Image 1 (spheres, rainbow, N blue to C red):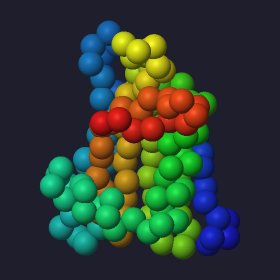
Image 2 (image 1 turned 90 degrees about the vertical axis):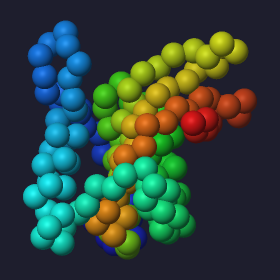
Image 3 (image 1 turned 120 degrees about the vertical axis):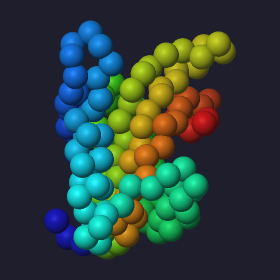
Image 4 (image 1 turned 45 degrees about the vertical axis):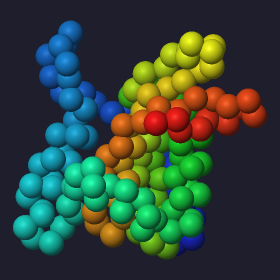
Length: 143
């Protein structure tokens, strides 16, 4: 892939746990293990809510655009628990959007709860959000 091209892929997110019980996505468990193992070695670090907004502010304009496209793809085309990933070859930043639950709002609009993982300069943050389809047919984050 050329450095200026964005990459978007699909992949099912396997879940680990006992069927019928609350299961954690395997990616969450793997990310926690990697963060624990690499944070002392100068590798990726998973941060808390305070630093999460700082991560978004550090995204380049291209990162934001590519992430926005991945969000639209995830909301419109992906089943629950299937990721839409993005990578900016120029900045090295990347992320994933994973729809978790689809429903209709009280006003009758289609909405989806989703998780978004963003990694900027080796620092990752996870956001749990909701998007609803607006009057123009685009998905807009509401929380």
